[in-house]
Length: 65
Image (cartoon, rainbow, N blue to C red; front, side, top):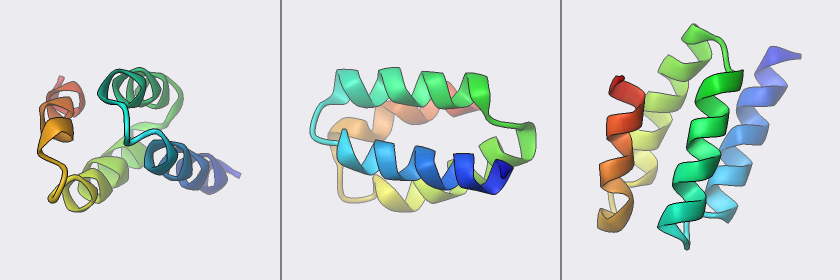
């Protein structure tokens, strides 16, 4: 079941990536709900996902905290 939460989070982040504020809000929610190892997986996925989205790149700071 935990894997399902990570997959769900990725889906939501993809759907809201058009709006930086909404993306940031959903990312913060995900960080508070996911397990540490899932957050690490999310960090790796996020690096690849936002490579062509420069306006979302500042959100990586949230995962370093």
